Length: 256
Image (cartoon, rainbow, N blue to C red; front, side):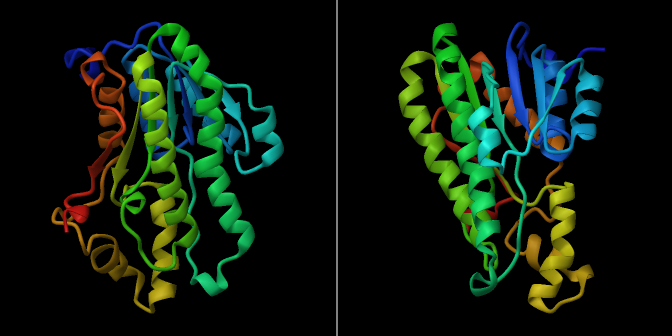
């Protein structure tokens, strides 16, 4: 069966890829899609069973790691010609109640871990004259929402890291871009519904329409596979001049 990527001319045969948070949601969809395009994928996830399941499905390698642990980051030995920085989590609370340890963990997972992976992978990319860094950011990398101080700060930091990488890597064949989805149909988003309902004092049944999709002109959640298609395109030769950008996939949220 011909994959969508093959039909679109995206051929990543012989390329190596690292996908964080690859055990579920967007990361899993990206890992599968990259493998369909021919890449050899290392699936990184906190959940070893989930990483293994994805890796077995695509003929890749599983790597279990807690990327919020500074000691793990010090010992991290992963490189790829393609790096998809996707791992993340959410914590919802007013700033005055936001646990400092949660704030630190969010920054470590979504800013420092991407930095470490990029830093380790750039020499390999430079030697190959090819590299693709895809940072799964968020509409919250460009906009803010209440009760999400850690997540919004981390995604804004990821945006800055991505742009600096784009400027340094561009002359050497390496691109770095952010994908900025709105709310995606993932376990992370599903877990937010109850927390948002509690923080805002509304029923859970009203959270998707009144909170998550309130600013979107297209009234549906983003599917993980839609994000994966854009990620794979950014890895193609056709996307070589797309560099240092933030590509919104939010139904029009950030158009306001």
